[in-house]
Picture (cartoon, rainbow, N blue to C red):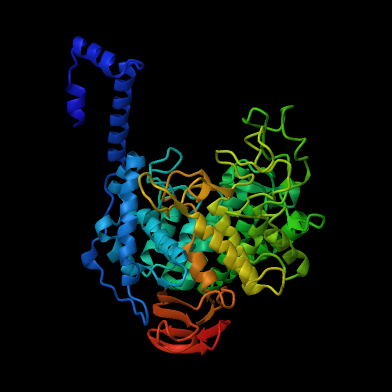
Length: 605
């Protein structure tokens, strides 16, 4: 086809006639050039998308042990998602063509793969259930294998700033937290080793929390061999990040530009941020724990000591007593954004000094201030947990119609970093983290909130807060396709924190691409809402974060944990699953614990 286009000869007469009859307002030569560009790009994508392996359904048999649910609970839904995939082809054919040639699981095999790999979920809210399976569908779209490694991508289409395999490390922590729940440990095992060993990978391109995520994966799929393979590489990875971002002139804390956190154009901007310091704390704690399991006392003690120092510094230097919040410290090493929206060093007269002064904490609360709880960093003290009051505040704080605003809504530059002419709080387009709801940050904050509800003594936030926020996040993940009468599951880049469009669905600032893999969801359902909490010993805790009388039933079935299969079900009346009333927990089909109502239960193997 391409050769035919290139070899086709238009006569001068035919070109003149075509121009006159069909495209009088366009220059035909521009159309021809555009066609040639499409051909070149398509050819380039085909050449890039070589040597990717395919899943063979014949080599894997489903060994999952379930007590209540079967894969039929989502079989029809998968067919509908595949139809959505084909609908999106009409919107972005280049992205879909590239994905077609690189993905590990093809459409014909998606149901069989998911039947083998994911925990099954059932509940009375159809949207929760649909988005749960949709997000697993999205996850498998981005699962790829090339050469020695499996890896997970963020974008459908090849991106210039990605590595050779289109991998971007920014959401790697979300990917591993999500992917740890797959039955087959090799997928995440290999993805982690891709970052540590592959010459193609860029594990330090953006800041992220890979080391912590590795330990969370290990808790599900324990393996001494895996720890032996990976521990020294994680140490090296952590040390290289520390060397890159440490600022000796400010208490050996860590600074980063906001865009290196994947959060460009924040009001607080670059500086000594709660995010990167928390990532390094979580990484050091996890390395220490893995070293202890491996019997390496030297690494264990060193990284435990490093974690203690980071924790002390975060609480001492990034906590604002006045704001009651963890804030960014604006140091001279940071970048600012001038009136022309171009990135420049802080030696320009047109910087943002009038917004954020140097050498002090910034004047804005942002969702990054909740990241310390992602790693259980803050002490179990009331003054810290009081910060969650702003999470609940829907007037001046973060709570909003379509999810959490990334910055507190009462700041004068809320939603105005890239759009100076906007009114305060009126979101515009573009990749700005000054107010819109970003699923990346929504996921981080909900993981942090689940930790607060499970691990801290406080009465500021409740199960209802978790449920309501996850509900909003769930309902926001719907949009309309052209010529489709009903809204369909959709995950883009960022949404307006408020407002619905003319069809009644949430407005998205960066709607495209769909199937964007930059956040988590299934982990929020499994470890947060249903409340499966892995433990370091031979046990696990189940602590559902579902408010009393909200759901009459739910079930998570076939969840693989240390080579055993867990079932968690709740049936208020006993009439849904016909296994009796209340909360029940099974291991490999055998009832191990129960309670007449929703409550926290610890189960020992």
